[in-house]
Length: 229
Image 1 (cartoon, rainbow, N blue to C red):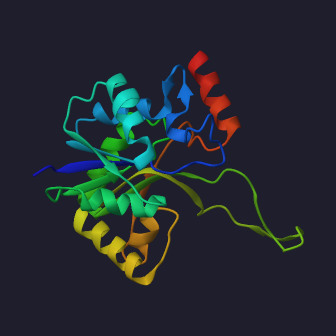
Image 2 (cartoon, one colour):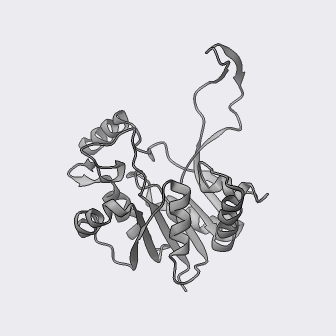
């Protein structure tokens, strides 16, 4: 049995930054698709035993021919067709597993600068606590606005964090959380939220401010600048 399986959902269209008909994970950064850097980092993590790349049906050939050959994946992997949104894609990734692992780690396909130690720490903490994610404390002052764009209140930020990936969970816990969400037709913004709905306490550890998610064109520009340093 694999102790840890990593799921990389990459089936989203990414309409906010689609280029030349390509979704975000396949946009080139320093002459390689963004997802290549993600796969490379995860392939080098000793705690990860197997990888599941979740793609859209339209892009599976591109992934097989233009992504995987550019990465040295020295561990078992499979490519799975995802769903209409991220949550459905993760669930399809879970269903595609031939054997139940101990831990499932989920990581965005557009975070190319994640320090390798975060994968390891997140997995180890998930083994102890059942669920662990990485995140960073909110640094800016937060304002709650009215519908008319007027400030109603300054929100205390001392206990507020921004969630990132990787996120790691015991398989049974994550499976139960996805099943409950499916039955109740609940759509979350991340997998931790699904687990929280079970009443389970999720551990959070310090992530990295460099662990950016490339969502908008300016994010890509920042990433390109970092590569030039």
